[in-house]
Image (cartoon, rainbow, N blue to C red; front, side, top):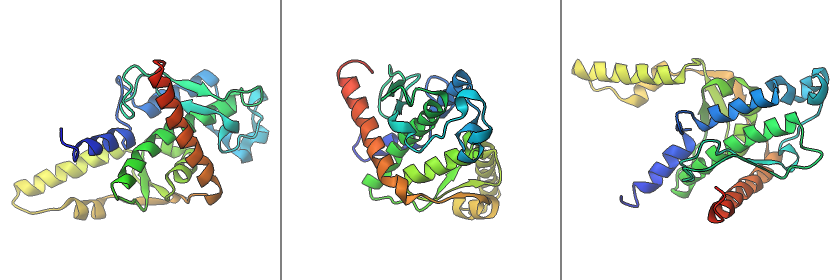
Amino acid sequence: MSPAIFPAIRILTGLVDVPVGGESVLHQAAHLFFVFRVPLYCLNDQAVSRAPGLFRQRTEPGSGGLVFLPYLNGERTPNLPNGTGVFHGLTSVNMAPAPMARAVMEGATLGLGYGLNRFRELGIEPTEIRLTGGGSKSPIWRQICADIFGVPTVCLESAEGAALGAAIQGAYACLMALGQQPTFRDLTANIVKLDAETRSEPNGDHREMYTQLLTRQGDLTRRMHAAGYL
């Protein structure tokens, strides 16, 4: 495999959230919310006063120093077929459902940030990230994405991103069969509509902290893998 292709594969598997063992990393992480019994609204500062019992805790970005390695069923980027999930930095303060749940969201998103950084290493600088899927319904996760990626994020009007993409591919094939010369740029410009109300701008106050967490996540991953623990 040539060096020109290999980096692209690392990007694809790291940023697009490819299913691992039948489930994507984000789907695997979502299962932990059922374990913690944490509704997403409990991670919202404005709703924390209404949260019951253990959830009545304000959860800041960074989860109180808690880092989650989101390799619940192995991983492809980084290449950890036998990887497992890890919480690092547990204390008597952050060992609670809300910080652990936020750490899961941040850990999974930091994994996507790793893939995005591969684009940047190759000279590709995105100006905006489009979010889709169930997680994108959460304004908390959308803000986490914007802060970690360092660029604005926005959702589509259509919640079914995979189906929309398939429809665009089908339209392209149909037009080609009819002798036309469509381009995906033109098709997406006419079909893909953005939901401006979901736009999140990166918070500059969080950028350095998330950069440090991404470095820490990567360092932990390399060290534990080298020791045979991942």
